[in-house]
Image 1: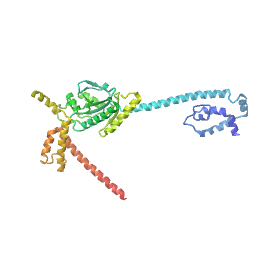
Image 2 (image 1 turned 60 degrees about the horizontal axis):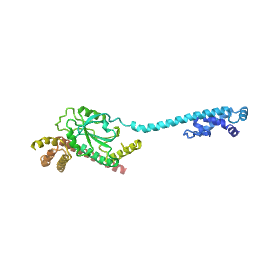
Image 3 (image 1 turned 90 degrees about the horizontal axis):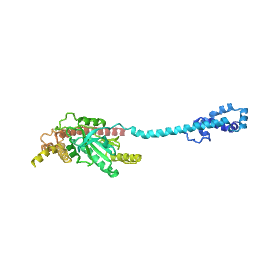
Length: 281
Length: 100
């Protein structure tokens, strides 16, 4: 009895079920059917309603017009339109989510770096605009540094040799002094001769130095009134910052990060960049 | 010529190069080896024992560097002690937990 009822009423049932997206897969008229939210158990939820609606009179009427009466046709169309909108929205939503996920990689970065105005060891003005179009490796130090700075600059030099061989001349190593009282251009120039030839040394007055250190979250201990002839050391943060060709922060490498890891990270970033923009820098 | 070299000298003194860094490190290492041989951790407590090395150390390194290296030697030694104690404790713990 029940199976007879179901087979006769199948089209109407189909339409009614399809109005609820979660069980639309039961209806073969509606093409999109890959919803993860199908509950097969809910099939039975309609049985009591079916039984209640059923009467001899109704059945006769439907048989006379055929299974696809005007009401059914309208319901079918309305459902179709509703589903079309539903899927279009869903598709847009998923696309948006994917886009957000991709972008969050960049949004998740710390807001480090930014505008600065310094002078290069060759005496030319140097601002953050010079970072554009190159991958920069930024290090803060001072030339009277007993052992850590030279070791770090040697590390950067070796890294540069390796990545330049792989990617070409797309890197800009910067040495920014945190000892503006003593590190005059000629002194920085002589100091950098012992390291990679592409190094550019940067200096500014005390306020400019303090400003860029703040932007790069670098601590340094030089007092504002340091004696230019004094024999003192500067305590400062030891990090090598990797900045992308838009001058945006990518990563910071501490003293304990081995150079192989730095090379690996740079290679990965450059390759990702190339995949996204078609260029290496 | 004399004018030229005298005007150049202050710059050389002020500038640290790979070469004069290396000279300083070598002199430092010689002095510290001498201290090690006499079981002295804190520089200056060796009496007159390492005076030759000390003289070379002071001649090749800036005062600020000497202070820094000497301080670091003391800190490194304290760390070595702490690390050794930690390692010993770990061994002890391992031996205990192995028995039970």
